[in-house]
Image (tube, rainbow, N blue to C red; front, side):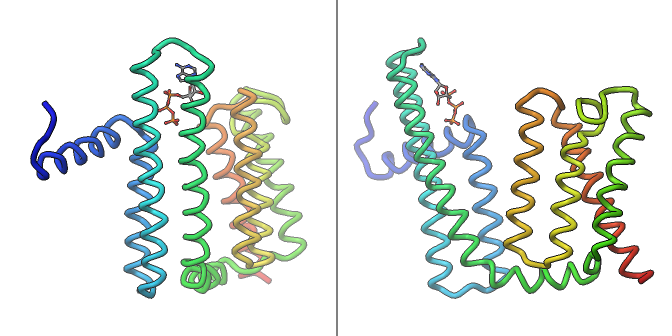
Length: 235
Ligand SMILES: Nc1ncnc2c1ncn2[C@@H]1O[C@H](COP(=O)(O)OP(=O)(O)OP(=O)(O)O)[C@@H](O)[C@H]1O
């Protein structure tokens, strides 16, 4: 039955939001990100203008995801079978979510960077700045540990498959070493982004499972940070 009262219309709108949260895992991630952003805004006591910008970007992402779900549902109602036009409609709607999310990430970074960076530098000073020698040692150590682990588990070759992912381990070790060498948050962020892309490619090529890649990333990060801490306290 069509709603006639305002309160019934509001109820329908809330039901739409609940349906999206229940059925779309991306919406649940967006809500989680919104919660984290809200807590960060409270914690760092951002200015009213900054809060307004953060709220706008979060609302825009949620708005785009709701529209995406509406488009998907309408398309499924018209044609549950594969259709090139259905694909275009769904891909464009998903593109809208991607653009909104990217914009929110850039805005979140620009607003929160000045609050987070000092804490970030303080945290890094505990581990210490990696020296040239420390960087070389940690990358070599990662390669050796990966080969040993692959030999012990009996799966994969040094460059292909097995536990853990050597590419993920080395990529994360390099990203960690660069982070400790430069102590520059943006450079660090970009390096970890590259490490994630390298790791993701191993999943796409079906050479490693998600677990192997995550384990590799953890081994690489832990060894690079560990070697740097050792050099920091011994040197
Ligand atoms: N009927 C269809 N015809 C052609 N392609 C389709 C059809 N249904 C889905 N697809 C393709 O599959 C993709 C995912 O569509 P789906 O309906 O499964 O959305 P989803 O898994 O909720 O994805 P998201 O919310 O991340 O966009 C679409 O972007 C589209 O490329």
